[in-house]
Image: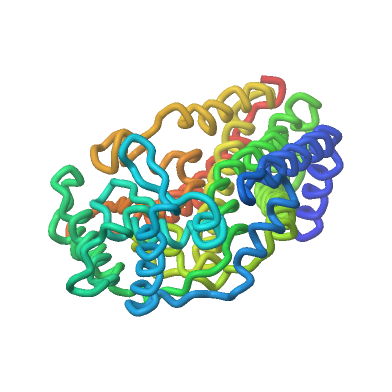
Length: 411
């Protein structure tokens, strides 16, 4: 059996179409993940710094080390901003909105503006943005109450009538939030920010794998070798199984190469720093108690299951159809049409289904509080995706083997 699997794997790997598709896909992946580097831009005293120079400048802004977000440190950050606003020479106006100008902004605020915006956003109502200038008008007579305010905001999000959460779902999310460690540690995480904004780009790698796997069965039909294979001793048993296993092995290895290339571009440019920082520094209302690395590994696991499910679907179509082009005519819409089916919210049957489609399933949706309830059991969207695509990946391949065994040569 091992020899058969190795033979089928080599057939996939040595096919000219496979080599061309993988080469093109790797180039596309490299280009797409290099775009954030080429387009990266920050400002230094009003002057733009672009590309690698901008990345180096932004990274240097964090040279002072990480910041623990305790009530004391938050109060200190807010007080420093307030003191800057007290000097009229530091303040500019835009339609009645105040903001800092000159050295007050570039030397004191710009290096930590993301942090200040994060703090300010914690005190804003759910769904509303608040920048650092809002800190100057905060009422802190009762103290910063940073984590109490965060907890109250999350209760407001969970209790929003528009979300139509059941009592069990609300309890599920409040429990999940309670597991977030305090105090939070803030630091440099630009590489992870780029990666987490680019998950859907891996769908092109999924498509490339499916294109390479598409001729596994129907390629035999076109070449006329199906009659020889099916008439052989193991043609209807081991050969079909070997083709399926080889397809999964090829898909996993090819996808790992794409992941390695994408991560190498991102982390060699922006650096891997921040892997152990909590997700909440990229959005305080994120309910998952994970670091960036943990969340990335979990979402990569989900994407792998999506990949395996798409390989399974490709194999079934390949066993049933006469041409790889017909297989792709079905697969491409399955993968990419959901791009135009943006969920209208986090509730409703259509939205819940949309969150489970292949394109959307590449995105972790970490801050959206999407859950599914089955009786008394509540699961988050990542868990449901993992279950759905794992079951699909296990249940469908036998249908491909059955279709190949029942194929009538020459039909």
